[in-house]
Image (cartoon, rainbow, N blue to C red; front, top):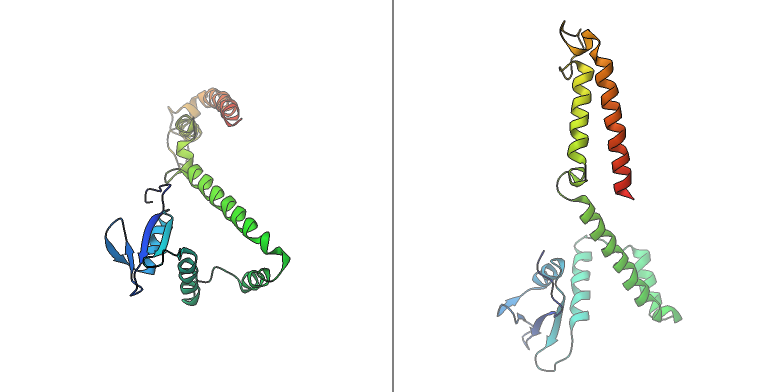
Amino acid sequence: MAESTDKPLLIKRYASRRLYNTETSDYVTLEDIAGFIRDGRDVQIVDLKSGDDLTRQYLLQIIAEHESRGENMLPVAVLNDLVRSYTTQSMSVVPQFLASSFEMLREGQSKMMENMGAMNPMARMPGFDAMRAQQEAFMKAMTGGMVGSSGPMPEGSPAASGEKEEDLDDIKKELAELQKKLAKMSK
C-alpha cells in the first residue's frame, strides 16, 4: 500500500484533456488515478486553465467505467435510490449516511486485516507455541511416541508400562493451566 498523506495528490487537467501528475511530472490515465486511490492515496483533479475542481466528475467517471466493464459493485436498486435521492428531501441525509457507512466498512476491514496477521493468525496469539508444544506432547503420550500409530504399543513404551495415565494427567493439568492463562489474556 502506498504511503497515505494528508495532502492529496494533485492532478492537473490540461486543455487537451490530458491529466498531469504534479508529483511525478508525467501524464496519467483514469486507470492510473484509480490505482493511486486503491493504494490509499487521495487525489484532487483541477482544471489548469479555470482552476475548477474536477475531482468528483473524474471519480464518477472511473466508477462508471468499472461498472460498464461488468465490474458491478453497485446494485441497480442502489443506483435507483441514489437517483431518487437527488430529487427528494433525503438528499441532505444520503451523503452523511454513505460516508459513515463506508467509514465503518474501512474500519472493519482494517481491524480484520490486523487480526489476520501473517499466514497463520493463531501463530501470533500469545501462548500459541506453548499450546502447540502441549498438543504435541499429548499426541506423543497418546500414541506412545508414534504419532499416527494405530497398532500395539512397543514393550518398553510408557503406555505399556502404566506410565501413560500419569503422563496424561500431567498433560491435562498443563492444558487446564494454559487454558486459564489464555482466558485471562483474552479479557
